[in-house]
Length: 149
Image 1: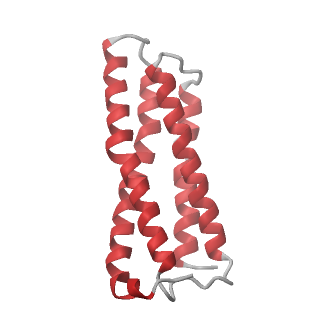
Image 2: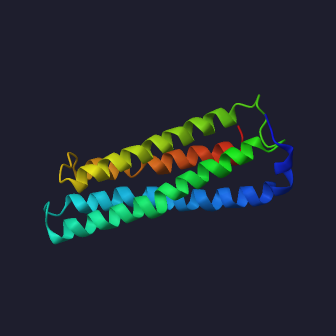
């Protein structure tokens, strides 16, 4: 199903989609790094409380709205006639990677709640490794969209 009235707005939709993706990815790269630093301070300390504020603001004011915008504009792109060749395999891989990115977003939210209640169960090494997940998914997504193998 496509919506022909979207065709004249294709470039605008794509531009806003790209801007939303950039904002989402910036937050997805930074939040796990904040968790690495948060692990290094004592629960209940002034530094810990400051990290909680930073993490909440990053998630609620940047990452969540950017993810919603990314999905919204992405869906509009898919509904624009001629954008997707439904027989091509690249978009299935891209969609899977975006779903995994959204799942990782959910994990970041859960870990923030753990820090908020001083119940973090992971160490700095865990968050350093987790910090690489959005990078790998981004590489897959960009290759699928640009190269379309």
